[in-house]
Amino acid sequence: MSGPGIDYQAVFQAMPGALALLTPRLVYADVNEAFLSTAGRTREQVVGRYLFDVFPDNPRDPSATGMRNLRASLERVAATGERDSMALQRYDVEDPDRPGEWRERYWSPVNAAVLAPDGSVALLLHRVEEVTELIRARGGGDRAQVLESELYTRARELQEVNERLRRAHAREREVALHLQEAMLPTPRLLGRHQAAVRYRPATGALNVCGDWYDLVDLPGRTAVAVGDVVGHGLRAAGVMGQLRSALSAASRVADGPGQALDVLDLYARDIYGAESTTAVSVFIDWDSRTLAYSSAGHPPPALCHPDGTVVLLDQATDPPLGAHPEHRPRPQVHTAFADGSVLVLYTDGLVERRHEDIDTGLERLTGTLAHHHTTTPEALADILLGSLLPPGGSTDDTALVVLRLRPPAEAGWPSGA
Image (tube, rainbow, N blue to C red; front, side, top):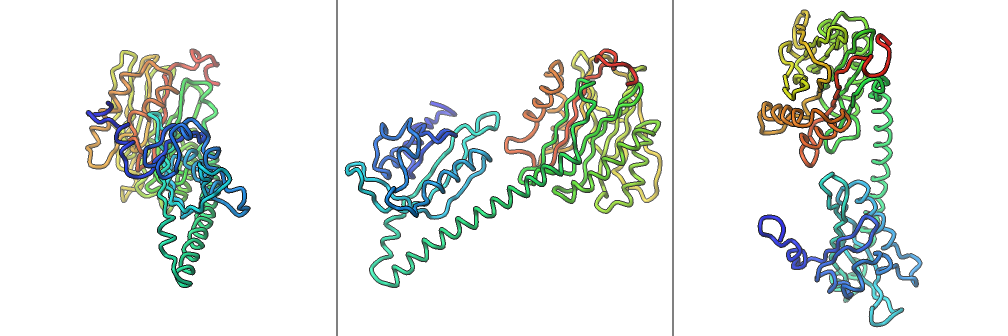
């Protein structure tokens, strides 16, 4: 038994539809009774064997495409984890009792991924419905034969169109990846600090987002920031790139985070699509062991002290960029930190969920941080994403910075470098 008193193996075998479980290498891991009955095979002839050793293409039909189409679909599901409903397929099957004799068969397959706890594809679920009799039932006259031919032809055309759309989507995704890497590179100073950065686009979006992070090293201090542009996709990413660059430049000359956000606010007023952007900036003074922070409508950074106590830096919060009719200086607050503390900056995709109060998400964040604060920043970043994001991914973009607060000299590089 597994689950709340449910024998899932018994359920799998009792399913009326033909189902097969395959490994990502396309080896049969298990099949149900309906699959064996439909395929005309025994369990010993199937389980543990490579799919296309059991069901190869008809060697007498040079135009056969069933094996190629099925392999492409299964490999796509294994690579992406996304479900794939295939068009109607002609896939002839050899008679197990008469070697060399092939039967004309028509199938309607659907392939889906079974995910492991870490989100990787553990197995492939192959569900197939035979429609051979339906095709044959349309026979009995020239008109019916024409309809049958048209049905099969349209299904083949649909498969080809879907394949072209997938290739186009893959190209768009590749362009989006290069764009994101260009606008949101991993900061070069990470090697000097115990730090980690992450970003995750919203579920269903291209691999670009309107969230950003930035780290700027200056003599005796480091400026860390995250921001969130309203919206998703390429347009939001374009605005993000402009605002990130502007804040990064401002942080290099500003006296503190409040002034850096003042400059960003003025700049954002001339950028279409920057309205209501949120951002938070933290300046770390390594000599005095203090943090100065300021927030433009952004969720508060979390500071975890070496004893596991977590404090939310929420005492210098102002409205988002461009929210005031007239510009005014933004607030700024200082707080002390001890060596070995952990600073976490993030965007709202990490803590907000629909139909849930934001405080619940913040409690999840502080609890997880307190429990795992002794781990490395890289490990902690992965733990936070794995514990706080919904299992199917967030509907909002997410950016994350985790920084262990150790002075530069202790990190193994000269102070002021």
